[in-house]
Length: 190
Image 1 (cartoon, rainbow, N blue to C red):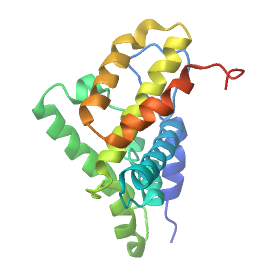
Image 2: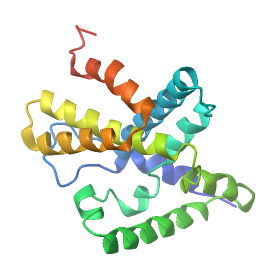
Image 3: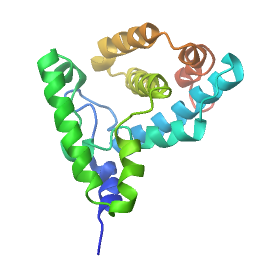
């Protein structure tokens, strides 16, 4: 039998993010997911080294890779729409769950539970790390757009910075202080 899960996952490169915003450079779901994975891995390591946590950093990275896989089917729902009110958020969560089930059904039965765990963000310990890694990735996009002269992302940048701070994740505070400033630099400065 042929299974199409991985062929579907490979299509993440065709899903554009930030559809309601004018972009100087398109960001695919694929590149966003890789960035979230890298940041989640870093945040977990920061937690382990600096805050005495025992996060599984490799797992954080893999969860980051799959955190938005449902968007292969649903597309990227803009944040202002998704979080407009609780009714929309609940309805969209049901759509995400349905999309995840469709993806899981594209796997052999013996692998479904392993991937269900990756698609459904059931890891309560790593969930705050993943959520803030997702926000940091969004902030990096806003910084890149601002650096390119695009003022369209100005409010999104301010709001995202606020949400990261409000998340109160110490690992994110370290990342923001020690690593985020480099995203303001040019290649020659790095």
